[in-house]
Length: 521
Image (tube, rainbow, N blue to C red; front, side, top):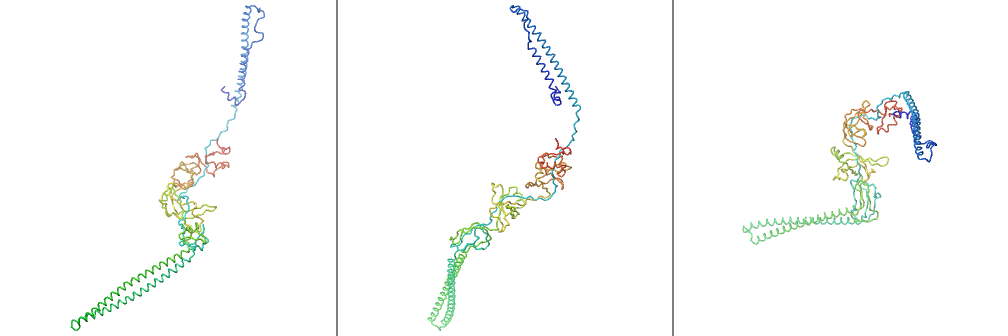
């Protein structure tokens, strides 16, 4: 039975025939033993009514049946032996045929040994200085927004055509005019009062001049009276003048002194009048300035180049002083607000943040809008809900830029520059700090230091010489010593079709036989 599998494989039904013959012979022998033959049972010479005869008949019948069974068993065993002999002969013939077939089978073709290889792409190493680009997203805002309010109330008699949302305004452009009639009257009244104040001052100054002349005359008269008194005293001492005459001259001196004091007091009073007149002039001048200012406020102009956000005035409307007329923002004063991660902020802070150039990109249509700018300041507070640090940048935009406040933009800026570094695809890095170079068509691992990640690129430093072939194809079975081939070294078009699946690690064989038969088993 050891050869039964070979028999089943080589000769089909031959190995089953002996078993069937043996089983059939055994069943027939057992059937012959159990089945009595016809005529077996009682002897015809016995009397059926005699009990002794009946017992003898039963004994004879039992002996006959036993002899019959032995005979049938013998015949069955002989038949079974014949069948078994035939079966053994058939099995022997099958074994002989199988042995002959095995002996005469041609030897199998020898298979060439092979080593798996992988088709890879390589990148020539080039050391240099690489500056990664830091990207963020932000919103454009107006750096200077102005709510224009009416400095003077009244009826609107003029509104500029472009004073509407989105309208572009030039510096000094007249936006709104209010009826100036009442304000012109106020200016005229202020000018009249100013002229009156100037006349009052002139009169006061003239009176002061006269009072000063009177004081001078009183001084001269006093000096003459005093001289006459001195002569009178000399004459009185000489006995040439009476005491009455002397007293008369003393009285004159006293009167002249009183007149001088009155003249000086009048001068002081008149000087006060002059000062009051001068103050009146100043008050009138200020009143005139206010009136002229109010008259000028009836015309509202744009302080700088601006864009209108909204307008609340129409011709014929009446509004009070201080009422909102329009809201504008300075056209060339836009800024972008964006958020940097703490890691990005730390890198730029060490390298200088404020004044750093930025590039703002508004991705619309086939041609994105690009505007340059600079970082102007850092936010006043660190908001943890934003996941970073808020940064403000000033845009170098003019009035014609299509960017408007509220625009969602992307912001790019140069990060820290890394010298003597390499830039490789992300697929070239294994286990976070290993890359492989191709050396004599074998993979060789090289440890790397990750400096910066930029999209699908990685800036690294590694002990790799310029010109070394860095393997950039991702292989599932990467390792030192693995056989690799460049894409341009493929030998058949069939290999080119399998390149797209290299990321999953398909292997090809270096032997021509396997390439033509579909690869290794």
